[in-house]
Each structure stands twice: as C-alpha cells, then as structure tokens.
Image 1 (cartoon, rainbow, N blue to C red):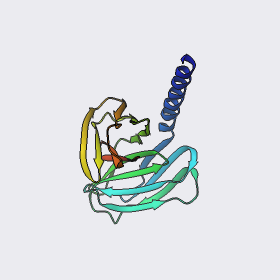
Image 2 (cartoon, rainbow, N blue to C red):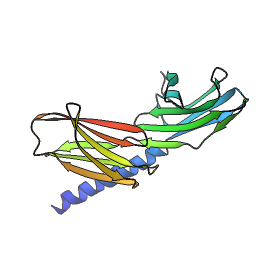
Image 3 (cartoon, rainbow, N blue to C red):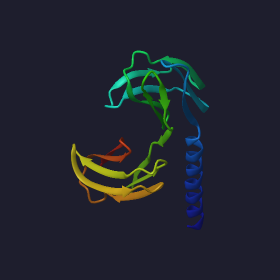
Length: 196
C-alpha cells in the first residue's frame, strides 16, 4: 500500500512539474514598428503548430491563422492599418497552452499590454469520481458547472486559488451523458462524461 501511495504521489509531482515547465514554454510578444505595423513574435521550447487569432473588444474575430509547419519560433510583421482605433486581443494556442496579449490602437499608436498564460485543466473520471486540477496562474475566479442534456444540475464557486484540485462524487447519477465545465477568466473548458 505504501508503494502504491509513493508511486501515485511521485506521478502527481512529475505531472505538476511538467505542467509548470510547459507554462514557460509559450511566449507571445507584439513589438510595434510604426503606427500601423508590428512584429508578432511567438517562441516555444518545442516545435508545435499554432492557432493565432485577433479579436476586438466585443469578442468578434477579426483575424485567424493556423500554422501548418511545427516550429519553435514564429515571427511575422502584421499590418494593422485596416483595424479601427480600439482595444484588441491577440491569442495564441499551442497544444494545451494559451497565451494572450492585449493591445490597443489609439491615435495611430500601438500600445501593448501584459501577457496572460492559461493552461487547460486536467480532468479524469474513474470509479464514480470526476477529478480535476487547474493551475490558475491569473488567480481569476473559478467555477465548476455540471450539465445533463444541456440542463445545469450542479454548480460550485471554487474561488481564485492558484492550485485548484477537487473531486466530485458522481456514483449516484443515473446512466447518461454529462458535461463538466470549468469557467475562469472568460474561458470555458469542457469535459464530456459518459456514465454507464
């Protein structure tokens, strides 16, 4: 029993360490060159495909690109001359990491905000328990929602701690399809569960 506990704790520690290492893996920067152009520089410690998007302050998509060749470094000059003055958000997704950087175009000037990194939560369902962990780097409020056929049947405010680990006993639920959602900082992460 002690051996199993040690192996489980070691696995949890290694998974946590790998997660922390992965977060430093993706860096996004916007370097203004002029009033209309900027270099978007993305670096990663591993080669990966990237999903790059720009949204306006209403959340409307104004640009989207997926890279086709895995690379550790991406540099591209972007021409923002077609964008109206206002606030925008550059988002880059690489595997289970997302890095965002807000920027503003105002009086023919590009101002860049602080980078924000998010890592998808880890979910598992076994022996009647839904277990999840989430590293809340931005310390935003986290809420768990649990749905059956698009109907909310449970919700819980988890708080804004950095390290969120929890389990939910689902052993009394009837057979069917369910969805767990972790919501934090305007993002939602879904995990479908099929109970048989």
